[in-house]
Length: 455
Image (cartoon, rainbow, N blue to C red):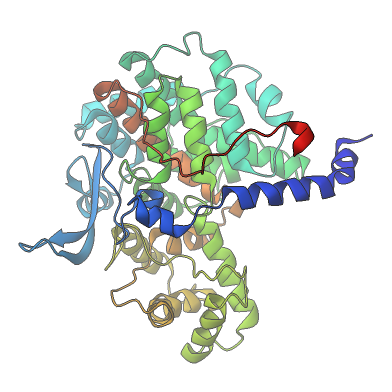
């Protein structure tokens, strides 16, 4: 009997057991309040509970006045103390690619000079290869419709090809980090090509990266081939990757990196855990939810007037349409209130790329909804403060305009964030030495054991 058939015969049993598990696991809100426990490690104002210190990056959406009140400000973000606006401006001014420069900055703590950057880029290029037969034996033999899962499997399998996988000395972990940064674009694109060939029935293309190309260029080249992308498109992808490379130690996947690193485990297990965190739609998978939401609105709102969009968004919040979650995706952030600097930069890239001839109905929707949606949300949820558009609002749209398959939207986030995860892993190993173990308060009532014949 096939495993699917076995599951089908037990479906009712599993359903009853899962319902029993669900009812036994529910904890009332009153108990959280009674013991002053912050759900999701956030206080009653939604502010993250401090669990550590970091020098890698900083982001802020508030200032604290003399009375201790939090005053919303335009969002700011720093990599190693350098404003992200200045980083992007400097890279654009030089008309160059900056992903590798930011990798050096986040890993090593300072901006590289020309010679240091050249040496670093050459090092990444030399490391941009996978073991012999790895693509055939690991990636192509077990294609997955979910590229994030395929990425995780590949990362875990690389452990078996490492001659010194369990050594967590800083030098060895730094070496592993550089190798993973170098090969992540290959693993993501090759996993997609396997999916495209074996699941969609398309031609199979496995292209070797070129040393003369940047990481962003190589990603597009391996995905599309020569002449199928422009320099402008590669620069846009490069900026997207820079903005997603790091976002503090408190975001879900980077905190996962710290937690798992503190256990003393190997790099491959750690990064696989971070990938699992990033995959979720509340984290790295959010940009795809925005894209699907926009497609749904275009399908059901024929005339994109402000009032029509507003009415549909109200239905969305009332759980009547789209995925019936009651959410408008791409709005709000745990840190930023007035604005998300990453969203501001991506909006600028979008406007530069989308000439008047390129501005279609979808562009009109994005342009209108960024103003309408926050007001609808404020009214519906009785929110007095401003609700900002976040980075996920624009990133998926830009990928769509770059003709990148949506199966790669979240993997691009992973290809970018491997820099931040690596930096946080190295920082955790350098400083802590203690396993991260937050406390949970047990609230189950005491009960007696009952003999099985008396139950």
